[in-house]
Amino acid sequence: MSRETLHLMLKLNPEDLDTQVALQCAPLLTGMKISNLLTVGRSKRAAVLELFKETAVSCCILYESSEKTTFLLYIRQALEMYLDRPEVRVLMDRFGYRGWDLEEILSLVSIKYEEHMEERAGFPHEIGLLLGYPAKDVTGFIENNGKNFLYIGYWKVYSDLTECKRIFKAYSLAREHIIHMVSRGMKIDAILRIHNLNQYKSMTR
Image (cartoon, helix red, strand yellow):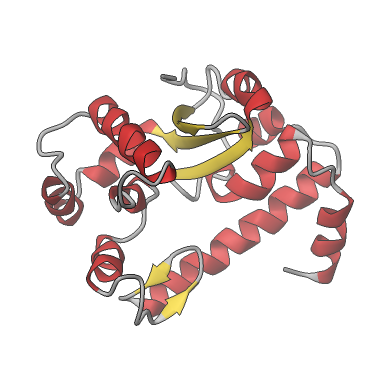
């Protein structure tokens, strides 16, 4: 991150919802990524649902505590296409989702993630696939227990390091781009319009 961008970021209000969405979800907002996790204060739950209502970004509540709400924000068509890739289908079948549609998958993942957050079960690795991580890297993470990775960026890399570094650089540039836009007073709905992510009705659960 450039010094100028860091300076702008430090001037943003960390409690502002637009700031939180910008910092956590920039690759999604620019259409570079199929999904992102967003964690906000529970009091902002309704505002998040309203923000993405009737946009191309859908919202799934993965977990809610007394203080925080964690969303999976995703572009439906892009996520469904990714989950339909042969190498991803193999892993999803292995995780127990053979033939499931997206709503069924998200419903069970939410239950499993809640169990993990409440220390009643292990981490559901299928979340890596829902976030668009390469199937080989999800497999590598599982087989190596999160160790022996080639590189760590937006996820731990176990294969195709050159391509992953290219993606990480693009995501970081997207984050800088969005920080500059928000620092100029641009709202998230305007950013979605600019990146053509405002034209579809979301499927919120």
